[in-house]
Structures are given as structure tokens and as C-alpha cells.
Amino acid sequence: MARPKIALIGAGQIGGTLAHLAAIKELGDIILFDIAEGTPQGKALDIAESGPSEGFDASLKGANDYADIAGADVCIVTAGVPRKPGMSRDDLLGINLKVMKSVGEGIAANAPDAFVICITNPLDAMVWALQQFSGLPAHKVCGMAGVLDSARFRHFLSLEFNVSMKDVTAFVLGGHGDTMVPLTRYSTVGGIPLPDLIKMGWTTQEKLDAIVQRTRDGGAEIVGLLKTGSAFYAPATSAIEMAEAYLKDQKRLLPCAAWCDGEFGLKGFYVGVPTIIGAGGIEKVVDIKMTKDEQAMFDNSVTAVKGLVEACKGIDPSLA
Ligand code: APR
Image (cartoon, rainbow, N blue to C red; front, side):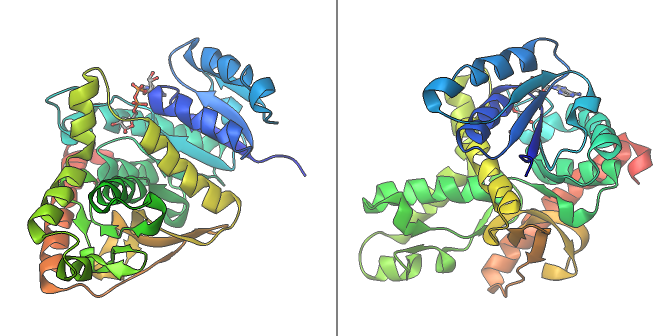
């Protein structure tokens, strides 16, 4: 059986890391696509040359022509501009919306059966625009945010409790970053929910609130440290987890920006929700009942995303 084909649209910091991880995990053959000439070719060759030491079987190719992504099984989109210090994800809107138009058209023409994972920010609006521009079925287009936000939350919780990250689970909903909604009652250490851990004296509500805030600001914290770009290792790892769930039909329950069609009271709208990812793409959006406080945070997040979607429609009337 031929190896799956993985197209990485954008060969920058995240794109290169995606390619390296996909090769090491032998998820398939990899096409790195970018408008910058030389960059995808250079990274493809560099990573291919790590193959003999790493011992992977995967071919890597750089490309500047969408024809090279023909028939891709998975497309992971990072094309666009990342944040600089002082910029919010929303500042990127106008620039990256244009990029989503060309990427959406390129995917539609060359890889219409692919499972598409968008990473470009502002995520929830860009994945919506990408689905609209590409016209691909909504259950085959999703955005990577929740896996990253919950990974950051899990990391910080493991530091607080001094336990392995493997034993910490986290449940997050809503838009990426600032309006993320952590569901602490569904987040656990070894199955013990966080509110119970407060009662057991493992932590305090104040400390937990500070961890939630640090998670929300997780992207900005890294932008502030790097100064010349934004996070790329953890975002790439998170998207690879989603791609692997699709390629291996793992039926993983992962939070991601998915098209809601009645779930969570939303119709025709992308936001971070729990989903099941398998060979069918987003096979299910897992609707859950929220408490009043959680619902208020979720509504706030939805309002923020709706604002960005409306702004997209204002910039490009073909989306209205
Ligand atoms: N088509 C294809 N590639 C493009 C296009 C385009 N129209 N416009 C820009 N690119 C490429 C750039 O040439 C660059 O190589 O996208 C790549 C982006 O890479 P980086 O600048 O290194 O950004 P990165 O850190 O990978 O982040 C990409 O993901 O998390 C988000 O906010 C982040 O939106 C940003 C995206």
C-alpha cells in the first residue's frame, strides 16, 4: 500500500517542525509547500538528510507549485504571518485572510479529499475562512487550538502538582488563547477532578486561577521570550497528534476548532469543542452540558470569534 501523502502548506517554523515530526513518526511522504522559493526545498533536504541517523522511511519534497500537493491525504496549513511582540492574534486578520483565500483555492483544486488542519491565526476565524474558500466538507476542515491549549494547561498543572504530565488530563473549550474556557471539573490528575484536589489541599483556587490565566496567555508568553516569532514546537506536535488520529483512524477525543451544526446551540460556526477524530475526519462533536459560569465564558468566547468572522466578511465581501 502506498504511503499516505502529507502536504504542509507553509514551510516556516511550524511547517518545518511538522515535517520533521511527521517523518520521524513515519506518518507518510511529505510535501513542504511555500511561496518562498528555496525554503521548502532546503528544509525538505535537510530533514531528509536526518533520515539515515533517525532511521525513518519517508520521502520529503519542497514545492512552490500547488500541483505538487495533488492527492494529499492530509493538509496542515501554517501559511501566513505569525505574531510579533505587542501584536494580538487578531492583528493578523487582514493579512492572513488573503493567504487563506489562495491556500483554500489551492487545496480545492489539488487535494479536495484531504483532511485539512488549520493552524494559522487568528485560528477560529481563519479555519472558517479556509473552509469557505476551499468549499471542502466542513467535517474535513478543522483548526488546531484546543490540543495546544490543553497541553499547556496540563504542563502547568503537572508543575503545580509535581506529577507526571501523562497523568494530567485537561478539558478546554472555546476560542484559542485569550477566550479559552477551561473546564476544571473535567480536568483531572489520575482521574481526580481539580475541584476535588483543591478540597484535598493539593492547591488553592487562587493558584488554579493563575494557572488558567497563564495558559490563556501561553502564546503571548512565548512571543515575549522569542521576540522574533511565535511558538512552534508545541503547536506542531499538537497538529501531528490530530493528523495521526485521522490517518490511523484512532477515534481520539480531542478538542479542536470544529464546525458546529446545532451542537452547543451554534449553527454553521467554528469554535473549540471536544470532537472525535477518525478516518471520517471530525466524526462527532461531543456536545456537553455546561454550568452557568462555564456557559458565560463560552458565550464570551463565541462572541469574540463571531466578531472576527464578521470582520472577515467586511474585508472580503465574497465571504458574506
Ligand atoms: N502561501 C504559502 N505560504 C505562505 C504564504 C502563502 N500565501 N504567505 C506566507 N507564507 C509562508 C511564509 O513564507 C512562511 O514560510 O508561511 C510561512 C509562515 O512561517 P513562519 O513565518 O515561520 O510562521 P510560523 O511560526 O510557522 O506560524 C505560522 O501559525 O501559529 C500560527 O500565528 C501563527 O499564523 C501563524 C502561523
